[in-house]
Image 1 (cartoon, one colour):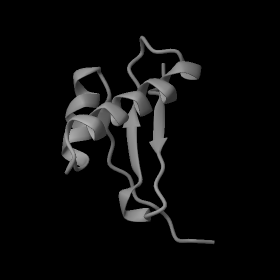
Image 2 (cartoon, rainbow, N blue to C red; image 1 turned 30 degrees about the vertical axis):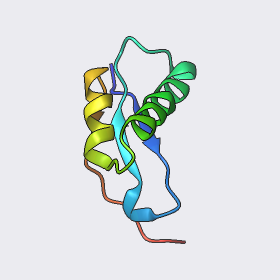
Image 3 (tube, helix red, strand yellow; image 1 turned 120 degrees about the vertical axis):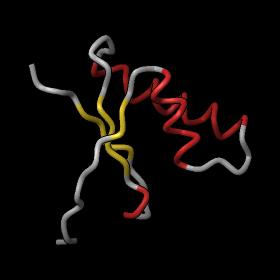
Image 4 (cartoon, helix red, strand yellow; image 1 turned 120 degrees about the horizontal axis):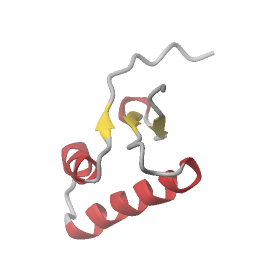
Length: 73
């Protein structure tokens, strides 16, 4: 079985993230769940950064995936 991945978009290409999705989440629910986790970090930590968000996601079974973003077309 292949690993399911999700892109966390950003207007700033340096802030785009790729995470693996835990196998126990349905594909159609996972984006809403992840954005809810991110919103909770934003509320709790006014000066949050990616590490704060990643910590919250990892607690729920997500993992950061390294990737190379290609050139703009």
